[in-house]
Each structure stands twice: as structure tokens, then as C-alpha cells.
Length: 198
Image 1 (cartoon, rainbow, N blue to C red):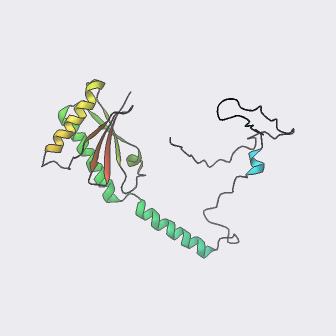
Image 2: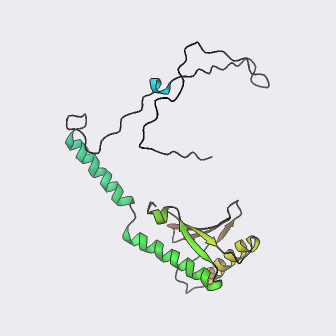
Image 3: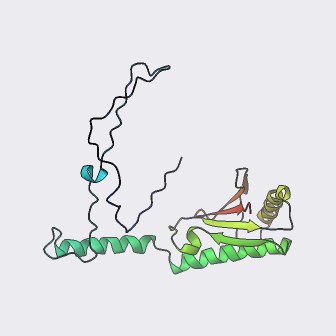
């Protein structure tokens, strides 16, 4: 199970939660196997009284704050060096663009109706240096039952070619709810072709 955390720049409203004015009620014991004699307390509390929302650190702190200007400059320098190391480089952007173009040309050679669309971290330029390329493959002219087989067949035939632009190997079909074909590329890029269910 995945948990997705989102951040917002808006503070939480002050009306979250309800303040209790009477003591909490005890619930009756739970019945059934393994729960004999357990009781639960469920008081309603105002979450702002328990854990106040921390104030955001300003981009340029007040000189009289607890962080000295020298410490702040060192922190910004360290952050900048990390961002330079994980930020997409021009060469990684060109490589991903070439791989996407190659996959588009490969499928259009077999059927003019194929449409290959990049999504996820690549078009948003938020991928890590060893991140994957997420692609969706659409084709209205081919039935859903045959699409996965045809995609695998095209990639496996490309796997046999010695003169292809990119080395295609270890083609794997993943029969999930959203069908996937996984193709590792150059030990740094996993190329996924997800079939759209539109």
C-alpha cells in the first residue's frame, strides 16, 4: 500500500477538530475472538492545541534569527550542490528524447495508428539520474486482447536485431490491471509502455 503526502502553502483552517467540554465516554467492550475485555477511548480534541502548525522558514531569514548568515549560506550551498547532482542534465534530457523518438518510430513502422505519449517525471523534468521513462501506447485500430501481444512481438523482434539504434533486451509483459511491458535500457532507464484503458 502506498501513502501519498501532499504539501500545501495554505495553513490549515482553525476550525479543524472539536473541543470536548465533557469527559470522554467509554465504549463497551469489543466482543469476539481476541478482543475480550478491550475498551476504546475516543475523545475529540482540537489538533491546534496539541500540535501547532510550525511556521515556515523564510527564504531569506531575518539576521536576528537563530540561524546565522554564515550557516545559512553553507546550507544553501550544500542544497545547491545536491540539486546540481540530481537535476536533469542536458545530456540526460537528450538521451531520453532520443529513446522516446526511437520508440515512436519503431511502433509507427509497424502500424501508422500507434501513438506513443510520454508522461510522468520525464516531461515534467523531475526524474532522478537513474529514473525510468514512462510511456503510454495508444492504438484504436487494434483490439485490447491483441495489443499486448503485438507490443511484445514488436519489441522482441527488435531485441533480435543487432543493428538497432538502441539495445532492446529482457522484454517482459506484466499482466496487471494496467498492462505493462518492461524493457530495461542501458542499466539506467526502465522503459515502460502502459496501455491506456480509455
